[in-house]
Structure formats: structure tokens, C-alpha cells
Image 1 (cartoon, one colour):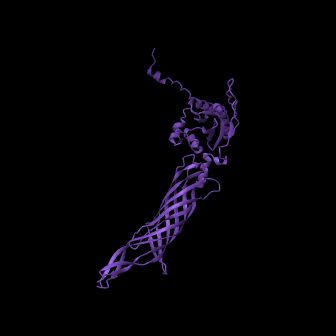
Image 2 (cartoon, helix red, strand yellow):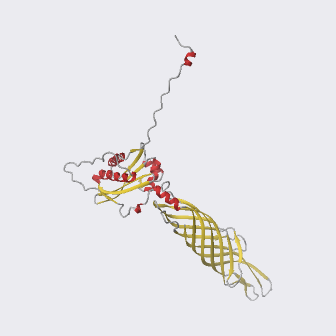
Image 3 (cartoon, one colour):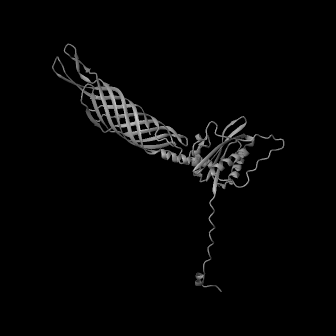
Length: 419
């Protein structure tokens, strides 16, 4: 007999199935190896490296595409994943792996390959080099991966060591692999991990005092200087305009407060960074100039005239302020060394004093339209004990002619800036 609708509604719903338990979090590893020309052999190297990594509790990361991830963060060199430790740390973070192992070829000599194994994890990195015959490379690489992971992880491996491939009957016994330091580079020069380097750059940057000394050449240009005189033949007043030039040189100093946003090797390639500057400066230049000094009349009725020029020497001190922005373009040569150029532009209003040599009083003017351009050839290092380093600075400091009584003043030169 069919049940009523009320009975059907009152019937309790079946219990929902219980949710499956959340999967246990695993420590994962990605191995990148392209030492040999044959991809099948490279796959065997990776398999041996993964087998070794399992002894340290590391499982392969499913679906990891190291090449595509490296392409996205500009970590390819010659079409292959870089061996640079800073970029490998960034690649590891991109892939989401606990550990990244990079097996790369350093060189080949006398029928042997020199192979580097670099492993990075959060807070550390380790790199070692092995030399072995190409025919016996798998065993050598697995052994070196074992050494590198033991140092990096700081734990004792579990389980038996990876098996050694037995020799075929009649096959010559190859010499054992030789563990090397990086050829020509000490272990200290290999630098810290990207994470440690990032902390060093953070300490090296931020707010700091900067100072500068400079030698400068100064140009003066006044486009419209009024010249007056009286014609001796007619008694008429004559008036004209002419240009005035001056040239000289001097020295200057700058003191600034700078904010440097320096590169973090774990988060960027270090190609660019920026800085702000708030400072003050004092320059002094001595200029030789020939201002107009009336007319010289010639001809029977003094109908021809030429402008007379006087020889004068002037002292031009300037006191200026700088509010500037700097953009650095370069690269990290290692996790702790950056080299490149630093472009700067600053608004730089100035007080201009002028004194003709032989006189006793200064004239004072204010120019609110000054600006300064700088180009630093820079090398910065992030390590303990370094707070300021001298950089070569090329500059142009320009005070435009904003009023008729003011000339153009431009100082160009070279100096050293510490920051």
C-alpha cells in the first residue's frame, strides 16, 4: 500500500557520508638534472636523486614543471634552469617545494664531468661539486646528493643507501668520484643562502646617512646683457644687447639622508632597486668671464662701433637642497654582491652668492628652479661590517635663468658618493 505524502516527508534523510581525513602534509622535493645530452640518462639521474631524497623524508612534488616556472621568473640561462643559488631559492618558492635540488654541469675535462649539486630550502642552501667519469655519473651524483642533503637537512638519512650499479663482466673499474670545492672558489666565496642574503641586504639598506665630495667645472651664460655708450661725434646715446660667457671650476660637498630599497635575492633577480634622497650641498666655483664694457667707436664720424669687453674673475658659492629619486639598474653577481648603474634626478633650489674678485661684498639671489642629474657607477656588498661604500658619481647641477638679472649656471663633474 503506498505511503502518504506526510509519511514520506517525515521519513528521516539518510546520514551523509563522513568526510575523508585530510591528507597528511608532506615534505616535497623537486630535482632538476640536465647534465647529459641523452634525456633518458638524465631521467635516470633524477630517479636516483629522488630515491636518495626519500631517505630524508622528501617525496617528489606531483605535477611540478620546473622549466615553465623558471621561464616565468626569468631563471633560465642558455635555455636551461640556472644554477644560481638565489634564483633557485626563488624557483623553489614558486614551485611550492620544501627542497629544490639542481644537478648541473660545471665543466668537462679529460673525459670526466665536473657536476655541481645545489640544494636550497627555506633558511639555507648547500652546494658541492663532484668529478666523475660520465659512464659512472649516476652513482657519483647520488652520493653527492646524499652528502648535500645531509648537510642541508641536518638529519641522519633513513633506510639503506641507494644501490650501486654493478659492473658488467669485463668492464673496467672506473676510478672513484672525487668531491671538490668549486674550482677556484673558496667555500666562503660561494656566499650564504638566498634567505640569509636577503636578511643581509635588508640590514644594508633602509635609512642611512650619505655623503659626497665632488670636483666640478662650471659654465655661465647670460643671453641678454645690456650695453650702453655715448657716440663721441654726435653725442647720441647708444644701446645694444649681447651675450656673456664664463668658465671655471671648483669643488663641492653633499650630505644626505637616503632610503635604499635594496634587492632581496629570494624574491627578485636584483636587476633593479630604488632610493630616495633628502640632502643639502655647498659648492664653490671661480669663474673667468668677459662682460661688456661700453662701445669702441671707429670711423671719421664714429659711425662704426664695437663692444668692449672687460676681463673679470668671479667667485660663485651656492648652497642648495636636494629632494631626489634614484633608480638602480644592474645585477646580482652573487647573493651578496650587486653591480650596475644608479640614475638619479633631484629638485635642487639654491641660494647663489656672487663676488667679483677685488670687491668686498657679495650679491645674493635665490633660484627656485634648480635641478640635479646623477649617474653612479656602483658596486654594493651585503655583509657584516659594511655600512657605506664609495661609488663613482657623474653629475650635472643646473640653475636656469628664471629672471633677467640671473645667468644660466651649470656645473658638471665627477665625485665620490658614500651610501
